[in-house]
Length: 395
Image 1: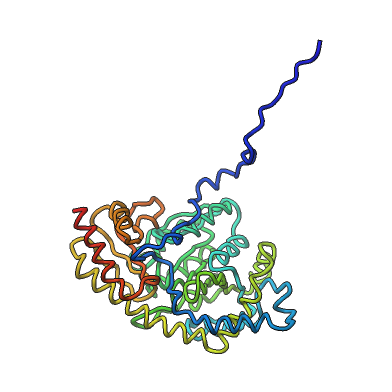
Image 2 (image 1 turned 180 degrees about the horizontal axis):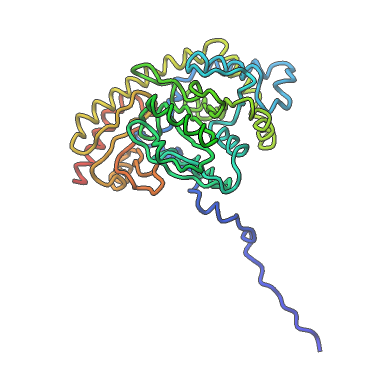
């Protein structure tokens, strides 16, 4: 008699493979900037309308004109030589970061800089200290690389060094303008963190978030300039300063890590876009970068002062501003749960984030984050007036 044949039921098309479970812990891809609200108080977005597009088109066109092999062919994984030189000069003048061109690695934004640092410094299972509240993407990134992020509380002086577990191999921190609270780490706390890293043989990744836009007082020295043993990796980005679409950032690393970081960059994507790198180098050499930062600092300062004044005046019974003298957002701690307020505000055309979005446990803190980089000065007052109506309706 004929043998019976077992026929397996095929899986539906496209469902046979599954990602490893760690990716289930990572949030969905961001779609927040696909929405165009009437009043946009979302943090993390600069004003692109003031960007010198005519100058940028000229500089890009110059790089595409002719046969420049170094720009139109495969490039150095470490970055365009002229851009590395311009970055070293800029951070030296503006932030007192002592760097030579060979210390600079050009990356695709600050996120890749953090990834490359983690890849050359961490082994699976290593613990990493992250600020809580803090910027979520690095925390999720460390997890996908097999590390174990540890939320560490932040107070009015910055990251609580005394709360960092002794076995952490790396600390990710934003000392110049802590995200999302906006405070600056005190000098005493900076020195304490560096001393901790020396004792524990650990690394510090310093994300100098929004440091270009400071409105009062003299900025404190970066951790990098206080470091005497080569434990600090300094991260910067041009996305917030110039254009989000310009996915260029940089990493200033100690000499002991240069070779490994160059290899990691090569294995990741070989190099960042060469035409944009060369154009940005010329933009910085011609003084365009400094002029743009100076212009936007004045523009953002007016918005910073307007948001501060109105929140203190109209939301005194609901919100308390966290003192901040830099950056493109302000944070206010709340007295009532924030998420219902945010949901009602979005339905009314006012988009902003609850402070709880940036805590490890989510909703661990009540408060709101007011971004003012993307909203014109003239729309701030009517936007906050509409938000006040939402508060009144919730009360």
